[in-house]
Length: 280
Image (cartoon, rainbow, N blue to C red; front, side, top):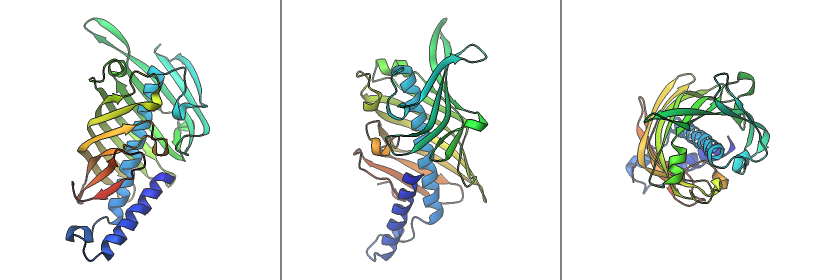
């Protein structure tokens, strides 16, 4: 993706600057080798996609038939699955989003009910899917195949203290060069602001307890575990970097490599991602 290539270039410039700075801390002299930079970009791609799918789930649940953000201009059709569950098919036809990325393909949002204390909770879980091989959802040519389940959106809308449990299972990001990122994730999040306005674009969330397991399927295949560093903040109003956290850190543990940290900034929309071996 264009944005991710920008980050890659920025990381490499930082690497060059650190190597040429004689006053740099010793552990910074040999930091940020290319494999670590590539791993960081793969984590960024996964994080952005997960956040984007959650935005879609929230928009269908709380804003439909309005089409905020990346949903503007899509064709949304309500229907039923073969099991009789309510679903929404969302078709993107080369749409340019607020982040200047082109989106294509089909996303399906399925209402998964749940039984609590003998009562049916309609649409407690929203299942966001991209599984039609000929029409996979893509962002600037990078395809998503799999599903995400988002829960408790209505409860979180009603109370800022509530959390949303977030799960991914056996999902893939497929790049034009045939590299695949297979990932699973767990996360909780809650509204910080925007829950009472009805405008999905002004929502701000705190992301907690999030973790990822990534398998980068290329030659050679690599494995990455991503754990919380510092609680992240996601602002839907930061259109120039939609779906990328604007505050917090992720701890990246690469099998056979060093542990490093991905820092998203201090909460400003203009903040850029940085990479280091230091927690601080």
